[in-house]
Image 1 (spheres, rainbow, N blue to C red):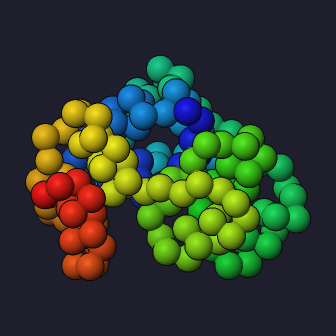
Image 2: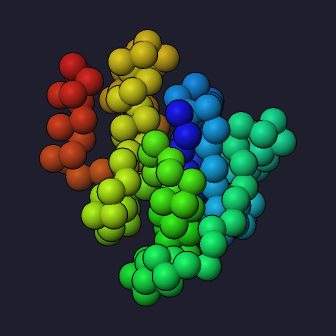
Length: 163
């Protein structure tokens, strides 16, 4: 499966040592230039090294979205990384775009893209037997990556995981 990611799913998973979940779920993970620049500034040197290793191993690839009307419209409403991720996903007809921020997720869905985020990746990993439980991973995300998830979304996710 082909996917394009914004910064937060990669950054968050790298922060908790779970970047490999992206490799197992997506044959190639594309990141736009803006996301590459943001990830290069990751404050955790271990997470940053894992991200750079993924790029060097070529399962995470850097792409440049065309300067299109779609990109220009998205830039009016979103941060550059989100806008570029959505535009690149639309251009390469990706199976998924990985976004955690609500506004970006809504815009991507409106243009017909399939959206998932870090919680979706964790759910898929649980169903595939790659992780034993979602709850400890969410707790790690909060502690190490300062990840915010509403209580309602957390309950919904844990219910979907059978936890």
